View 1 (cartoon, rainbow, N blue to C red):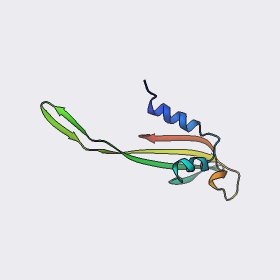
View 2: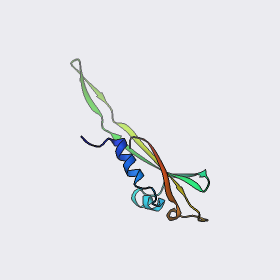
View 3: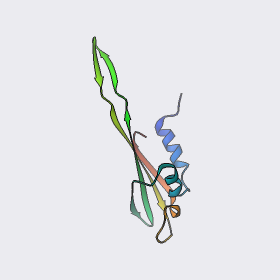
View 4: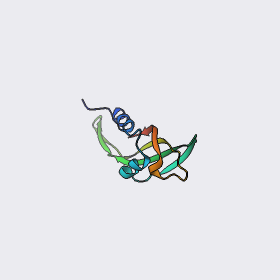
Length: 102
């Protein structure tokens, strides 16, 4: 049986601890947003959107259609730096979180 999506996402994000935000930006593009969380820590967030396919469902001799739906994955890395005027390469990942259809 395949790896559950949540387990996969957790494994991938934990593997990024100790890397820089620049490493993630190389793979995913620049973060969509960032915000200070205190003590020289900043959260960097990416948002991925997609579309799940619609479905045709037979119900009691009738055909019911369900339209496509939008999906969203929001993932965030917490990072710390000691650099003044820090660039993405100066932020070291210390934590993470994610929510949605990741």
